[in-house]
Image (cartoon, rainbow, N blue to C red; front, side, top):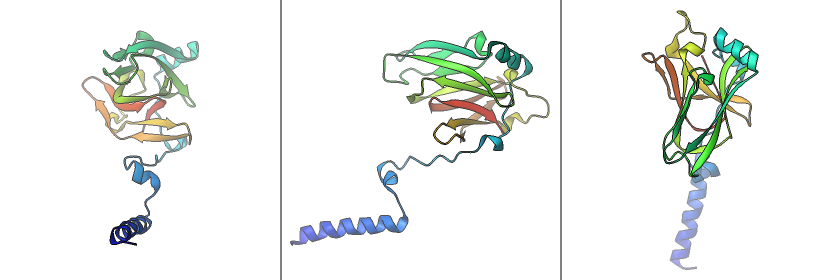
Length: 189
């Protein structure tokens, strides 16, 4: 065996030993940005509730759903009176196809939990913004709106994953969060 082959074999062995020492796994080597989602059971989150007007609308209609065609070159906003102030803002070039039909449904689970679901499940190449207005949820003088957090449902584990960058816009009275995929979203403490 020549020196070049010996060097290559020793380098591979050293790399393998190094990986075992630091306990890295294959996914960390392939894509170091992927981290295991640490979800929270629903019962450990104090979810915000829809206000009485929204709750009675949802009970009367069973659900509120809108569908909208969004074109990649222009982006778009899903927001109608039916969505009771909730918005989805899709920037231009957020997906590769020329157009997508996006469906948004206001949901109320369990004890009137305020949430929204988007279909079809999909990934985006840019972040889309979800806005939840204060006037759609139960917010009173005792609610510390600055502490509102946003969560997405990991449907594989049935656990809620906290979204780190939530903006509570006091001036416009909305909670904004961004995501690169669709699933169910909820807000709470």
